[in-house]
Figure 1 (cartoon, rainbow over the protein chains, first blue to last red):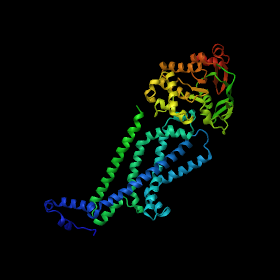
Figure 2: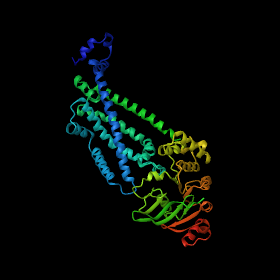
Figure 3: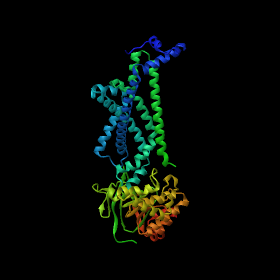
Figure 4: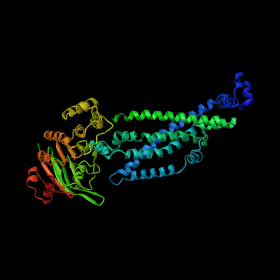
Length: 258
Length: 246
């Protein structure tokens, strides 16, 4: 049995509860229905799991794609001589990628990936599809953030690294990227928060993330108030937690600026 | 200290930025142990010339033989040769996210595969020489300009270079800090280091240089010993330049 009416529920409630005003009774009933009845909190827990997996997966994919694109674009734009053929090809591909991803809605990208390109069947494939779509999307934004970070580093740092005998790539790795990351951390944090919230869109490819689960509960109970407000509070808690984490990380990195 | 061995041989070196010709065929030979000071009006190409010597600027013509290898040849692995060419910049260019010690050990440990303890020992010895051993664990932002530049010089020395290039090393310093940096460079010259220095410090040039080169409009207008250049300049542009700076 999935559906419980208010009168049924009230009949089962302890006697002292009957003296409470009607609206409090209604409110507690809704909370009961949303979380406790038929172990519905488990739906939220399952949904959260999906949300976490997709967020973390997409985050890593996005950062890797973003850094790669940023390095290609800055190497191309800043190279003193005419960039070589391979670099020019990569740069063109990067530009096309950025234009397409930033020029179309995330929802549309999910629909295309989910129903045209990947068409996942198993649950695992669907999660993978979600991660890849969101990662590719996030990568485009991370790329521009990372590019601004790399460009913000004085070109003297590159010259200093190169003049000691480091290759272009190791100069990037040891000297430019560590400083760039420190500079872009606030913007990157912003992108992470956006990504976390954007995972709520994966329900369109039938992934049961926490948003989808809240919708499912509403479709059973026909009461939207508590599930959706709770959903908002869940996201809020996640975002506040993430912000705190980023703050700690940022302070740690800043230790070298005295 | 000058030997007969040619360390760097520059032939018909040219550099264009787009349509602008900055270097119009420079020929010069630098012997091991020689100290060369490059002077000239601003915008004459002297910094560009110095920066082509380790290919921070890619020349558009001519050749640079360093220890017998043509480093302008695209097939040459420039990274190997740069290890032997130390460079000191006007803006110091220390790595701000690393301590002084780390600034000095990263290159020898990563590139020469020196052990960490050995690299730190060498670094400390060098820091002691320039009187900055107590700042080993400071970050660059905690140092004065003069201290930063002294660290930059010894950082380049950790790679045991065969030649040191100085690109206006005292131009960004407060006047009271110029002396301490020039002192370090002077003692380096006395130790027999081959040096190519772009500077506006004429007193220093007079005292330390084995040879002075006057560059103007992308060519070497005159070269000679400090004596010849300062007491008996021949070309009118040099005379004009010296009358403004001395």
